[in-house]
Image (cartoon, rainbow over the protein chains, first blue to last red):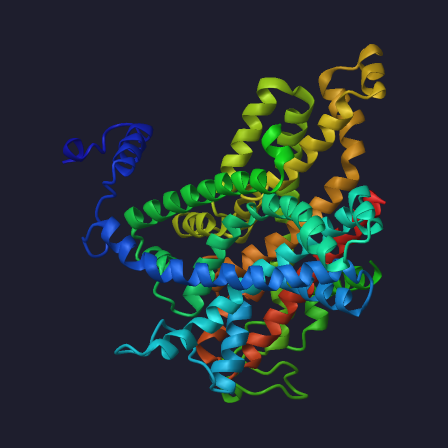
Length: 265
Length: 259
């Protein structure tokens, strides 16, 4: 039995066999229900992609105005408020923020559903959207807090550079100087550091999905963890590490596209 | 820097003096006074076993703060060792160590720690080691960058000329010059350690009941959000106060070193 399953071979050989099989798309079978791991993962993937996609969009929509305005009005009230808010956002435990929003908007006010992706039995588009609001808000707040700090910092650095001063001196409208000249320059470093947060996004998805019972990969992970379903856990961990690396590569290209000096070096 | 430092110091002081500060024993069960809302007798209310939430917060601070502070020390020691070696040696050793660091950074920390915690069922001491060992990469990068910048300076060369060995140059001449950057990185590691402990305990794989930690108090509070919200608010506010203070101190230290 041990020989037949290869359990008598050294650990690294077993791992290598698993890795090769993983690369070929053979991810094994779930310990808990015997179905193929790949099937279990792919049925959960759309929910996670939806949540993460919407959260990323919201995070960008929060980051750009917050970071730019805070840098332009340095030291004024808007800057102070966003600085404090973003400091709180990077410090808050994501799951607690989720619990808090659940307590306020789902339990207290009853405006939004507290968990799941739709009302049991399926709902319409509005119902779907209502379920999405709270989990997406948690992820977006955590990401935007971190990003807007970077953007504010790199905008401040950029605004003091000679080419901005000269653009202003040539009489270009302030809006054009900020949005066309400064923002493009300031976005480069932001894109570069934002990749560090790709791993944060994965952890955030695990936490948020579990708190809100969002039926995606994150809650698949915690379910598999509770059942000691190691085949599913290994596949998920490998998949997320691959995703983080892929994200980094994409960000490198994006950085080069935004800032030609990076591509040249 | 004064306010965050004051907040952090008083939390640590309360944790150290927990038996004096807490009005009740943290695991004292009083079934007659279960699920009571905050009042003069029970400042933060009571939980589903009638335990005093304020007392559990104070004793939980011992566990949560210890995990945060000590895991940062572990992470710092590993990070300084790796970063110092890479930065001083340069070349192939530097490249190899930094690729390992990058690879470690690509693995999402929380899920990895959750799996490790389920497999190892760690005590608090081992939890500190686990969180520390999972968090050395940022420190290694910072120390390496500082050392690379310093290694070509004249004082390093003169130390070599005076006959100092590799270890002596790194420990006596390079590392003291990275102190400021290390301090910034350490404060951030404290905040990260506390967040990780709370998340692990929240998922029931960190600090195990009946011992209290801020994270596992939230784990227990999760089932009573609608009826006893105070159970979820007090521990969360404590975590937030601690991490905000640590991050704010790190911020000030960083801006002081750059100006």
